[in-house]
Amino acid sequence: MHRIIKEKLPRHIAIIMDGNGRWAKKNLLNRIMGHKKGAESVRLVVKTCRELGIQYLTLYAFSIENWQRPENEVRALSSLLEEYLRLELQEMKKTNIKLITIGDTGKLPETVKDVLLDVMEKTSENRGMVLNLALSYGGRDEIVDAAKRILRDSKSTDIDENAITKDFFSGYLHTANIPDPDLLIRTSGEYRLSNFLLWQLAYTELYFTDVLWPEFSRDDLIEAIMDYQRRERRFGLISDQLSKE
Ligand code: IPE
Ligand code: IPE
Ligand code: MG
Image (cartoon, rainbow, N blue to C red; front, top):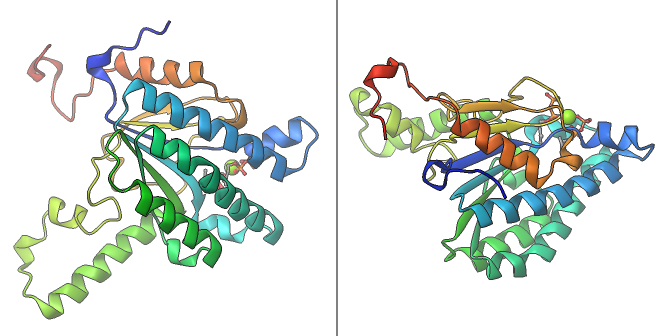
């Protein structure tokens, strides 16, 4: 049994799933096999988060920079994604999970886009948990895109300079309707954000583990959540100012 405090669950967990390639190398396999094994961790983590009652789970599945990887790897990643979506639709329906995406998904191959749209449509009424996949996602790209759209809108409707608040700006990001992450997990011993949710992570608690993504277990997830629950989120205040439960 775990010792997670139900009342203090992170509402939104975001994960940079890293280390598939190194896991493959360690096991004398090719990188693609690492991604295949990584997909099993995705299933496990989605299931566990749902069971624990996490409301939002964002997974960094493919960055805008990842397009520059060797063509065969990019192709394998997109077919794995397609396979994952096809296989998981029933499970998402059964467990009441709603699928959404962030990122420049227009760049994805047509077949992947078709399955994505299908799964999103068929799960759109689900309220158990939101599974948000970051696909072809870049944080800086998202911010530039928001600025462009504000400029475009300002041409058709009058936008006063003072109307551009943080909330207003957030409304133009791909994450417009979801709260900022409370906890960010990055696996594989890398300590960087790699262009992930740059705006949204402003006050997120960061958790790094050496575990490679294909080996990330239910216990590793629980440990990350327990670590989060031991922290004090001060948001710039001093300890005494925070209301104690
Ligand atoms: C994460 O694993 C998966 C993606 C970025 C798509 P990597 O493929 O980055 O694995 P490493 O970093 O090479 O070990
Ligand atoms: C970040 O991992 C992107 C995903 C997990 C999808 P990378 O492996 O691409 O990041 P870098 O290149 O090590 O910064
Ligand atoms: Mg990596």
